[in-house]
Length: 162
Figure 1 (cartoon, rainbow, N blue to C red):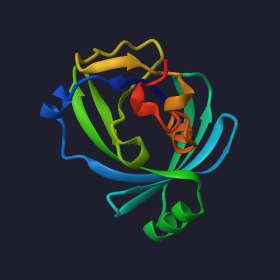
Figure 2: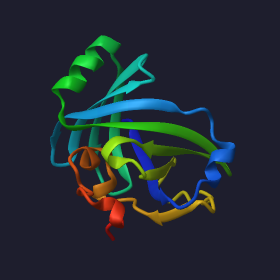
Figure 3: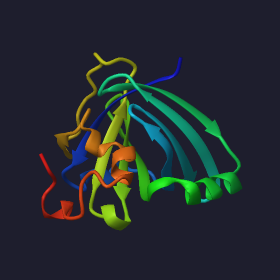
Figure 4: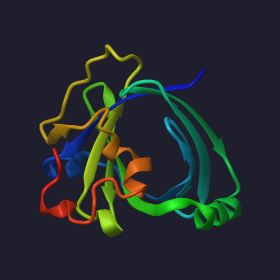
């Protein structure tokens, strides 16, 4: 069964940009959510689209099933989705033995930069880059589902909540 195991951090500095790839623009939204289950649609660079079902297990692990869908279907699903459509650019940055994914958010979440690293097990200990800030693994406010639902509130730029 496909499983996603990841750690998530806020990003403290822009030093990651030196090693980043060109990035991909993503528009994504939650179609359905119920407790620890969500169905997400994501458009990538306006060319590809993926439908993702996530079923939570713990703060670091969850089952994840992803499927390519026609881009026209994704555009329609984005219009029908719950909550806000999130727009972000995702960059990949190699560090140690891992590839870190850095999400730079736009719109209402402009200024939010989050890094995540996928691991093979919950006991794996990836090398942490110096540009990382506070770890937010397991903090549901920083899941894309919660961000689309406004988990950080309107005035989050005045200081991220603890």
